[in-house]
Image 1 (cartoon, helix red, strand yellow):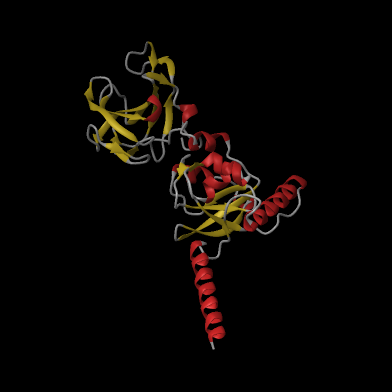
Image 2 (image 1 turned 60 degrees about the vertical axis):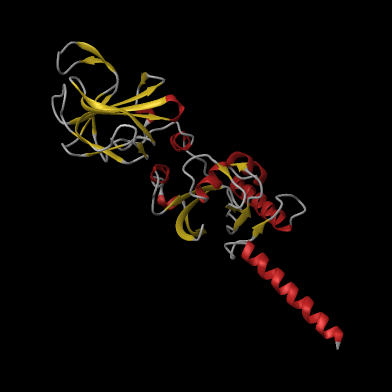
Length: 305
């Protein structure tokens, strides 16, 4: 009689162990990567599928079925180190996990990994990077549904794709978002004929014409370090960002942030106006690096002006 009881206890223990492993493999439909080494069978399987995918992309052949894996972070690791351990481009990990900037993963975090390299573009853009990714040709990607952090999102997968120079610059924090929903470039950076004095003068930013009252966005997250009114810029705002960068917004009709206020990228900070030395409603926009003006045009996404 003791033997059946013992067998029953063993079976119950195994059931509990398997159930715990299933819960650990969140989402349960995704195979869980373990040690990220050859001793882990799931990792070996993912690497074999990855090798087949690389070969298919290089040979112009049909890609094997895409498989999503999950990995439980056990010790702090940055995005680039994890991409090296998984043999996946950092773009694949970043876009699959909906990251809009490089960062480290902490113990206990779940990271999704794929069986093929490529870029994932969300069907419902949320960040500035998402918006750039959404401009990719729709017919070159395939639709996938991904459950990340308990939320299901639709993505378009572009096998073998990497970030464009513009996407890469934005992801690495080298780009600023366009500060208006839409605007017309009326004056560039550098020497120009002043519309006020009609003499040649240095223009430290760009002018973007838009109707009075148009929302003005913060071009990157940061902190409001100066705001006020002067004879040239009229109502203005200065935001300081990481990396010794700052942005200036002039000729505003209204300011909607306060001094020392923290702002997020894309946050509405004011409205277009024609205050100060201005011949019509527009935004004067500057980008400065360590206090020195830089041409904003190469530093903002194109196609929105």
